Length: 244
Image (tube, rainbow, N blue to C red; front, side, top):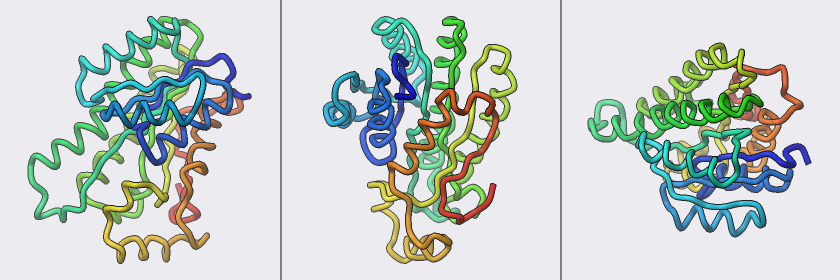
């Protein structure tokens, strides 16, 4: 029970990796706040994960919404110990056909949303005086370049954000690391053309896509005391597709 007594917030918790991460932390004894822009999906995750989990709606690209939900976490639990910024989106637009609004939306959710959650979450951890852990989810597409430009740009930004705030927050005992998954069996992958999916699998030495729980176990580790001397790191979970 690595996280017994801890309070953990997970974004993008309505399905896929986010749901698996919520379930993992709940299994490890944490009180978990599952956030998703889709309130029904967040509540479904909470129901499936069981006792100690609540589901709340939050548009992480909206600064006021993020601040409000973090304030609710403190009102309910009085503390925040760990934050997993998993929420993300993308599309299959080619670079030259990418509309301005698509670029802005993807950057807004993936990068700005991660920034806003890190900022408000770190403020709560700093006030609590007990340190904490932040896990930001990026993507192996940043290193392979095999992904839409807006998605790769946003996920690369997450890596830079992580390294910067890891240094700044270290004196407060707040660790910040980046989890870098490869292709994983999630609903988001269903929107990708079959030939793209097969090409990804062909590029993975272990010969398969990852399972959401395989990513969740690493997220749990990075937020645990077992990773107490790790901060500012990129941790790959990609079957050998790329090396960090």
